[in-house]
Amino acid sequence: MDIRVDEEICIGCGNCEEVCPAVFRLKSNDKAEAYDPDACDSAGCCEAAEENCPVSAIIIEED
Ligand code: SF4
Image (cartoon, rainbow, N blue to C red; front, side, top):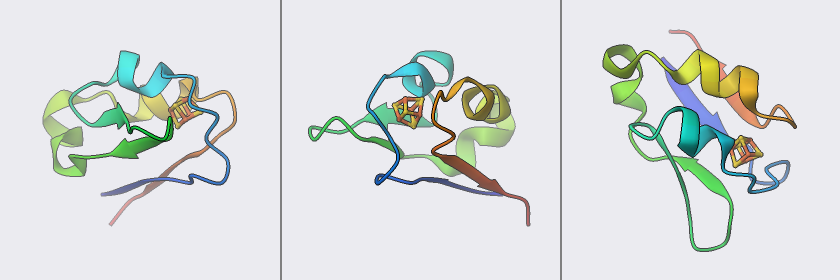
């Protein structure tokens, strides 16, 4: 599973970090990043983060 955040779209709302802190965090430029995509399986919150992103900036690509 590959998780990416499209920084061109991200508005830095922080929802993904709140919903799924094991995988997402806000960087100093107020854009989110998926800093640990491998944690998606164990954390089980990546789909919820994707669904809660107000601008659909989170891209999940299944292997
Ligand atoms: S939820 Fe979406 S818009 Fe908000 S910080 Fe995360 S990626 Fe960016």
